[in-house]
Length: 324
Image 1 (cartoon, helix red, strand yellow):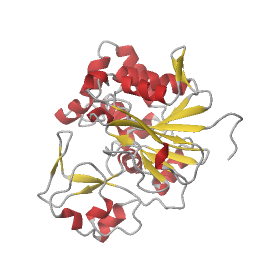
Image 2 (cartoon, helix red, strand yellow):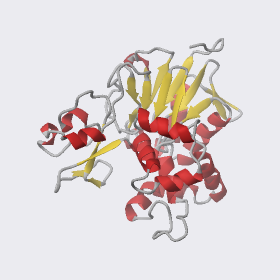
Image 3 (cartoon, one colour):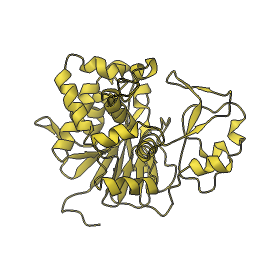
Image 4 (cartoon, rainbow, N blue to C red):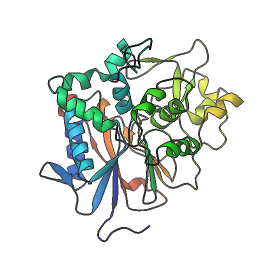
């Protein structure tokens, strides 16, 4: 790895979810200063892990800060599932479809994007520009010895994506295709931005902390030989009692991805971690620590190391919604 003189490394920042003021505080804590409306550091660059929008009180600020940095070359970013959801929610379905939009305007989906649409309501041109910018965001990133994806690095699916889009930036045709169950585009988008969802046994469900009832749970991708649900569950909500020891069958194991210990350092968001930031493995860091739920907005200061160090986490707390 050869870096330009004076460059120290990247600061990777997890899911902001509309906590724009908290993002400004984190950038300032990391040594970035606003110059002409753009946060800059003399020796470092930021990489955002996606999910800038939804839920928080200062969504427009969060998008503006990140977009200005990216457009100025001071930061990079990958697409999160919430940017993807917004694109599909606001994109008309093809003629002849049974629905009007690529993403159904159901009560659940309306609720997820509701804060974003409300905060942009008086700024329709700005929202259209944001959607156009979201379409330019890559689904994954490899740079200077590190890898970044919002939810899950699946080597085979990323290879298939890059055969069509070498820079991992999709086009409108792929967006439409990705909303059709069973297509390769759907598999790629779902795995990279949402990870693996493992269905619960019939009749079981989870009432999650964000108020939704779920019949599947999120899994991770760094267990070499998983045998039970407890080996792969990765979410803040507990499994129904007794399910941690429920055995994975062969079909369920086939659904899972695996990221080798020998692979380059990987940074993800998405998983709503809680508590003090920790590393699940020496070459994997999750940076989503539930900022919008009064958790932490977390960064990792990467200086080129192949084995990550928990001492390099930096964060600021989110104490109340009005200050986020």
